Image (cartoon, rainbow, N blue to C red):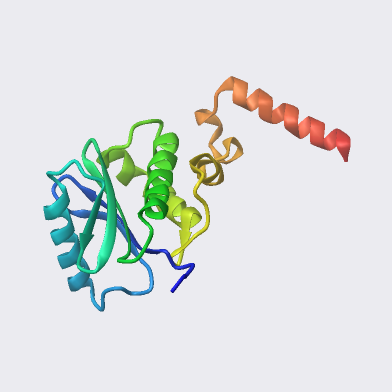
Length: 171
């Protein structure tokens, strides 16, 4: 039966199999204990392989590793793997762009707010909203006006001032 609810979970774990980020949609597991058991089983099956897809416990799981992180997108057993891979690639590429190609545990933990915003931009309650990583990164990225003045470059301050002058002249 076709459905918009393609994604059951998005999980990011470290290289020891510990959960860093996990969002489950439509409650595929009744308790956190069962979620952790599933994650432990998933990590044990995937951390030493070079594959990209696994069928596990009535779920289709696509995954990717980077430095000291493992990224997982989980769907139902009947879900199209290409759709799940597009979500996985969007997640990884968005984070790669936002974290300035430094996708590792330390930077991910330091930017958890941006990671959760990225997940929310990509998927809402299991429905895929966006699969273009540049669009997601643009929506989530911090605007220069929101940064303290000390963290802005002179060029960005001048550009911001030019834009403000232009808008005031147009009014």
